[in-house]
Length: 406
Ligand code: AMP
Ligand code: MG
Image (tube, rainbow, N blue to C red; front, side, top):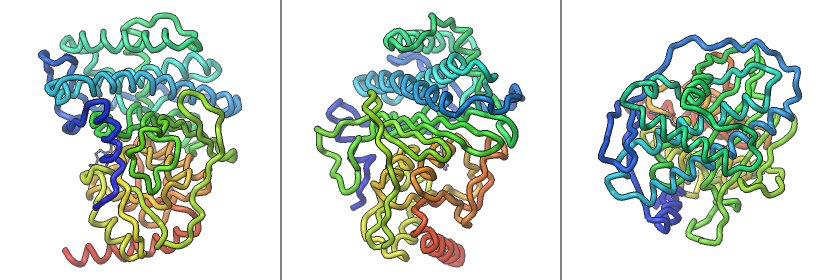
């Protein structure tokens, strides 16, 4: 049987009263009977963003502090919504609106805090959401609810010096996220809720925020509200004593640190030093639709990996790997799927600064300078420096084998 952190964290959520399933985020429609009557359809925006003109005149240190604050406060909003979702009735649980509200709310909070804290440079944000649907008449109630949540979250945090925001402020803040990124200047990269499926199941998700400078990731923050502070390696995830809520952060050349989301002192983390694939354990997506479990299982058997896969949602996988909970992360989306930079930028630097390597399946480093998308070969493989050559060999052999068996 697979060790699935997704499954096991359901133990936590069952205690809070919920295990929920939800469809993908596209093609949604309005539900008015729900406890969360705010369902929206989402669309991709092609609007040209404000160019990021600024070059780095400010130390990354100040930007890192702002990013940590932004992700932590956004995580609080998300947790509030997730708790309400887990306590809601069955009908509400099949409604996509809670995740929609949390997604927009999280993006608005991050945008507003970065704007407030970092006045020296005009904000360029590459983020998943835009306000197109939220501006429609049928979304009035949703927008009202998001604005209320953002204001409540700011009000309950004594450290945020932002006065009450209006609905228009929220829409504008969300639309800051329309930047196209690219190889020049500075661009923030945000996934306001990475792992939405985990979010609605009451399991793992992350707020993932990174900064690109001249096309390179120079800092990253991963807020993982449901990830235990102690290692999830070999855990049965049933311990109610486990404190949850991790904040990982990394700055180029400065290493990776982890602290609790409620503010314990940070500790430096390192990837596993394991050189023996037989002793390795590996992470992969909980959702089989996001990454081929068959291919990863073939790779694992070629390498001699004995442990079952650890399946969790979101970039929490990168966080867990950065502190050595497991030594390999494998991701093989279906053919034709194009990865977005916000699904990997923060995770990439958290792992790289902890001593790990993130490559595509062909062994090339990820290139975040191409705009909103990653242009990569087949999949993403993550491990420590010692295991990477053997891992890439097993990956190539397994991909060839699979192709010839078709
Ligand atoms: P994970 O938590 O590993 O399942 O990855 C979550 C991320 O996968 C989401 O934020 C989506 O952006 C992304 N995603 C959505 N659809 C797919 C797909 N078909 N293949 C791979 N990734 C996807
Ligand atoms: Mg994502």
